[in-house]
Amino acid sequence: MRIILSGGAGFIGSHLADFLTQHQHQVVSIDNLLTGEEENISHLASLEEFEFRHQDIICPLEIEGPVDAVLHFASPASPKDYVKFPIETLSAGSVGTRNLLELAKEKKAVFFLASSSEVYGDPQVHPQIESYWGNVNPIGVRSVYDEAKRFAEALTMAYHRRFGLDTRIARIFNTYGPRMRLEDGRVLPSFMTAALKGEPLTVFGDGSQTRSFCYVLDMVDGIYRLLLSQENEPVNLGNPDEVSIIDFAKEIKALTNSKSEIVFEELPADDPKTRRPDITRAKEVLGWKPEVSRGEGLGFTLPYFKEKLGL
Image 1 (cartoon, rainbow, N blue to C red):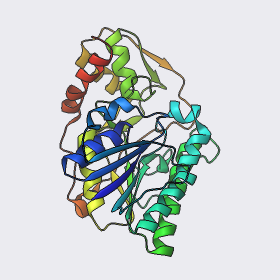
Image 2 (cartoon, rainbow, N blue to C red):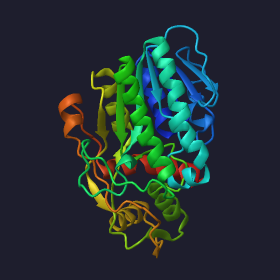
Image 3 (cartoon, helix red, strand yellow):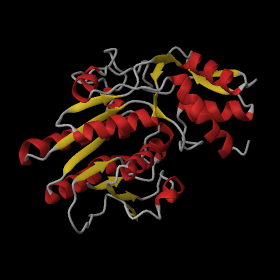
Image 4 (cartoon, rainbow, N blue to C red):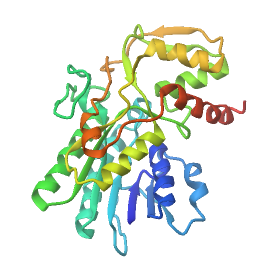
């Protein structure tokens, strides 16, 4: 296939570019490098199967030749980033999604939206299943990301229903692994960096809130399976192995042999209390479930953080 991949220099996007080129697909990676890093894809630059375009998807896209699939992974994705870039986040989910949907319609290609577990907001249903509509504050500090993804899903389904566009929607839960930005503000890089530097690990609230972490190569496998499927409506992709933030901080301390202390700060507004995917549909429709345990995945990730910190 010839695949257009927005956000292709980002964390998940770059791993996906690796996977697709390894499977002999042609990849045109598009990224404005707002939060993506060209270093993530520099090893692909010499491949005939790979092309990088430094471009913002809110600008009209001109792609010559046939296209088989358009994969939309472009957006700031951490609270720190989308609070810093609120308009860019909303634009990526609205104008950017529309531009890529139009491209897919023009090329008669499959359109794949990388949505998020954040469409569920601070959920009142646990674990989260695709039929749950969510509990989102539409004007809260996190709303620029939550509502951007919810709008992108609505727009994708509108193109599917009105134009018969072949669509895929992945609701991606917390994902981790090499190439995460050390300063992106998410819990794993924050804890890992602080522990390795001997600095305090900051836990917000009392640490009883939960998250579920999926290793990036498991996630890429699920994304590819969904792309090749015939499933047009949203599918959760994530690891249902749930852990409290305080226990996760202790795991990181043990992994890194760190003597860092754990400190507590006030819980940010609208921070989800629980996060765990129901992946029944992914198992049934895709034959997919995560294979890498959290302990294994963290072990695979640690050398990357050590290298980035010069340790």
